[in-house]
Image (tube, rainbow, N blue to C red; front, side):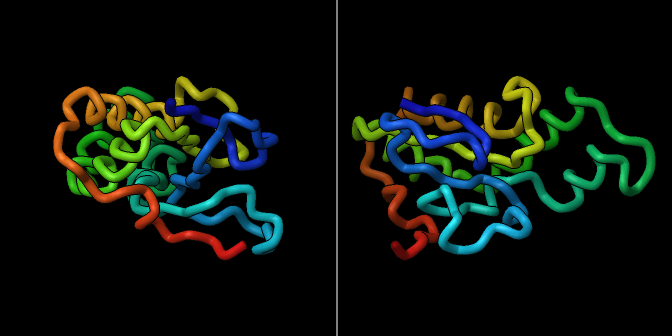
Length: 139
């Protein structure tokens, strides 16, 4: 089970492992206020892609260009995607969290990432690292 939410959305009982997949950590959130169990900034869009989408270095790119570039960037993150796929394949719930500003999951990288993870679960047959290799927050 793979869910997607914003980091500020209330946790649900069935969320399982909640991982923040944002390049940037939310500003002003104290450690004890974190709503995630782990943070994987490498699964967020690169700084350059983030800047291109928001027009910080010229005209903003459209969603189709953003999505294509994000998927290409994630080709270098196969290890981590397989780790999350292994977590999901083991029957444990997984929730991908993104920015509080991402109100439309259909236009957010967390949904693209969910699709990439699901594609890995369809073909996962060998034991991969588990999601516990993610930077965990101490509780």
